[in-house]
Image (cartoon, rainbow, N blue to C red; front, side, top):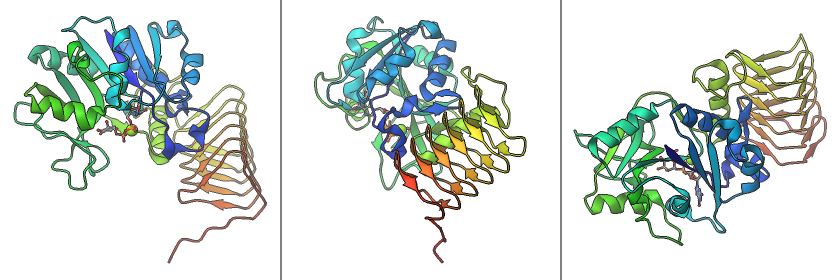
Length: 356
Ligand code: GDD
Ligand code: MG
């Protein structure tokens, strides 16, 4: 079984952490986000993955190599200029070995899902669809592809990111394509699978099905969602074959030093060689390697990049701290703030009061 994973996006909402590392390669529950998807694919009998890369392809290559450590073959195809989601899928077609009528899995590279991939494949095969989309329900569908279906699970429309969605059922970013349908996507130009390919297939009467499902699902594109997804794996809310330790309140990676008087909970990850001093508290956060969290500091629902320092009694909440950042004592960094790589913040320089 073959799978294509789209990993070409720039991950702008997670900057500055994505300036050096593409979003799918950011540390997540102890290993790069993408390794959780790759191990899930392996468990679903996928033995050949083609990564459609564009932004910083070398980072993927360095980590995954030939794929041998993951029990599969991994190929890389890099777009010289980003071709969009559909263009990215078309661009890797020459590396696929499946026959024209075989199913090929296609994944957005930033989605965390617990759905049954085999059941989605089975539906696709049984009903001989052109494309079968994994669909989930969300409270607010505006940021997603909105996908109405009829009573036979046939997709009747595909409306990408609309202000007035006609249903809460959305595209979850995992598709089964019949191989020959991929070959029909125009080559060598930018194509959006959501705005062009899917609406086009519906117009020509091709059968598109929705595999509707209620298991765990999360797009980890925002800092808050990224922290939540990582914590959900660490605590065992979502099972991942890539989790390196038994589920629990926290994951301490190799050579992490957490003082006995510090609290680390809520599914936080303490990266390799990171030090957490007495009286510090780290809750539902992802702390990279070589970080120092000084005595009495609080880090809540945040992402902290490698080699950064959080000063004594400083509060970091709902924030993204880049790499090599140095934050002095007694600062308050909250409410969606993002601190750029290598920034230096003096003791007591930043205070926060919520608007009245
Ligand atoms: N190779 C390649 N080339 N990959 C790309 C490109 C490109 O030009 N542009 C985006 N990607 C990859 C991203 O890295 C990501 O893994 C995936 O395609 C989807 O792009 P996002 O930028 O994350 O899209 P989105 O989250 O706004 O919307 C998509 O996902 C939603 C579900 O999370 C759409 O597919 C929506 O319809 C869907 O609901
Ligand atoms: Mg996304």
